[in-house]
Amino acid sequence: MKIVPPPYRIKVVEPLEMTTRAEREAYLEEAGYNPFLLPSKAVYIDLLTDSGTGSMSDNQWAGMMIGDEAYAGSNNFYHLQETIEEIMGFRYVIPTHQGRGAENILFTVMLKEGDIVPNNMHFDTTKAHVQYRKAKALDLVIDEAYDPSSQHPFKGDMNTEKLREVLTRDGDRIPLVMMTVTCNSGGGQPVSMANLREVSEIAKAFGKPLYIDSARFAENAYFIKLREEGYQDKAIAEIVKEMFSYADGATMSGKKDALVNIGGFAAFKDEEMYRKSTVWAVFFEGFPTYGGLAGRDLEAMARGLKEVLDFDYLAYRTGQIKYLADRLLEAGVPIMEPAGGHAVYLDALRFLPDMPREHFPAFALTSALYLEGGIRAVEIGSVLAGRDQETNENVYSSLELVRLTIPRRTYTERHLDAIADAVISLYQNPTRVKGLKFIYEPPVLRHFTARFNYV
Ligand SMILES: *Cc1c(COP(=O)(O)O)cnc(C)c1O
Image (tube, rainbow, N blue to C red; front, side, top):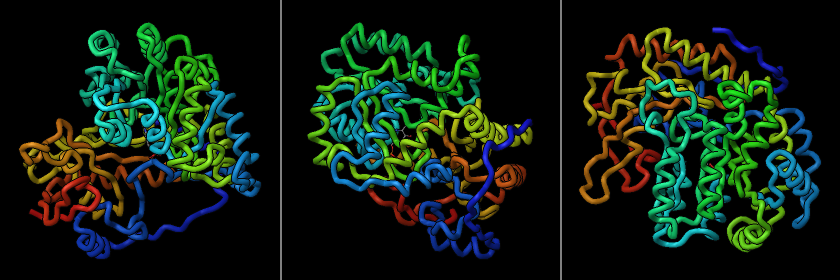
């Protein structure tokens, strides 16, 4: 397990407090055994998400000091716009408060009831925005994505045969094609350049625009460089440029690969799409040159977009995920393979083969992991899946996963070791993981506020 050395040093620190087991027991009981309800101060290592939880650089913080807080035409907006044009090739940019703000604008312009949006795999908020407009969010990712032990190098690829079929059959109901890079809901798995190119050719042949949901575009480019024939000698910036050359526009959550704590944008090649979108930008987000952000936030995002293209940064970042995955695999812990770009996923069904599904093994594991090491992880399983809208029965999702999401530039290898030690210790002592039952179950999005007790 070779560790790439970190391409930065630490200049500012945030103290963390380690709690005792007795304190964690009290916190967990108070939180109804739901990690979402734990106060951050009770958590030692927070792996709930990589969204907006990373560290900014000194260069980004310096940029915050030159925020131009003009309502219209801020200097920082122009810097952001130039940066996006340079990196991604999109001339027209609308900043938004975060990624879902961009989705809201794009889908308001493009979607109507009965439409279909093909995507390799919709992220939750993207799917919710599509469904909110009574359109259908269609996931067309290749079958390997659903097999946690498949070693396919690009499990985020779209099944292009299925895409062609649906465009042939229902083309008149499809206003755009989307690709999510990396494929977040599929475990941070990358999309190959060849697939992106083919999807773009198909979309073009049917006269449909292609939009990239680009939250982790740089992590995706890194995997292309590493794994795809013909890209080894290309710079990350070149690969990114080629990826976006196949698209007509993009939505972006800056909280991921723009290395900021808040922000996002929508970007377009077409002026007409931009014009239509600005109307809704004003309505939902703010004047189109600030879009719900302060000038200083725009500056931090512009600088982050350049920093994220650094090969050494990406090698270290993805190396951290791989390091944690390898430590777990070495101890026989069942995880989703290969390791993706931003998280390691524990496969709770293989981790706890004897626990009945009704006891929510993946959720129970997040609870036990907190007790074990003060580590907050997130369930991607049946509590998240909710109930069937018609029968009101629990939906038992095909995979019960625990996501250990690694924030950017935040934790050291020692933290990763502490995580691995806690997980391995539970794997070797599975009786320490206790099944859970609901004592309060909200009717929608139950995972956020549900309360549990031990079975
Ligand atoms: C996070 C994310 C979004 C939504 O972005 P927010 O900034 O959380 O609103 C959309 N798509 C993908 C792939 C994401 O990871």
